[in-house]
Length: 340
Image 1 (cartoon, one colour):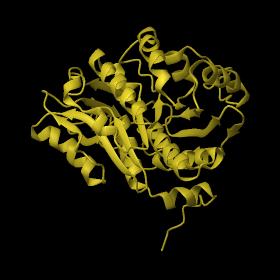
Image 2 (cartoon, one colour; image 1 turned 90 degrees about the horizontal axis):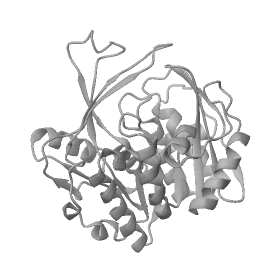
Image 3 (tube, helix red, strand yellow; image 1 turned 60 degrees about the vertical axis):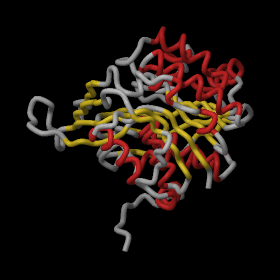
């Protein structure tokens, strides 16, 4: 299998049990997770050699995050140790018409304060096949944005395929700041992943689609896909298309373009959603596995969409499914019968 590197922040998610609200609970579950860490876990589950690059404190709370990655087979040798704190976020799970809610407590986390000298990116990228990052990482701080650039440059020196999940987070930065940082980084990217909001707020491209109204016809994305590819030279542009009918009922599909052909995946009705957190990361992990394994954009996309649909049924940030389970769903086995 392939060697895959991801760079980012792993945090500790603090959540009330079930659908309790923050103000109701007197205890929180600790759930490790974070964009690129979630991708690494997915790919480790598919059998790849995955490396997660970050920085975490040397104390026991930092070790919780390291141990969570090791538990699922992610290599942690390139995680620098030091800094004062692990990023936290609080997540309240919504239901029906009440949306889920996230409150961040991640300022000045170890990775946000990391320095270039904490990492040898040439050593990290040696022998790698794929490098993945997301827009969350450069949003953490100017230092983290510089680390992202240095990692991308090293990946290109070692002829590593680079993917990005644009992943705009309005609680971390403004669209103006995101565009000023993200657009220059696109020169290193081969595969660009994002939804309609990400493309607009990170890169300034707006699709002709009313996602809130449930109108997600692929035709609305053709123009921006072509424009993004022409401007940045991507090899692939990929978008998830989520129809949010309620907090526990979503429609889910995706679209991919290779510069010649557009392909739209099958549609999944995900109802009820058990945990939506990590849904986009599970898509990215599935897409990377699909593109490395099948060399066919249609089959790769179907794998990614099926993987993400399954993640919505699993509590926590990590997508704990095998490639065989994903392929079974992608091939039409969605009846949920007990496997004996």
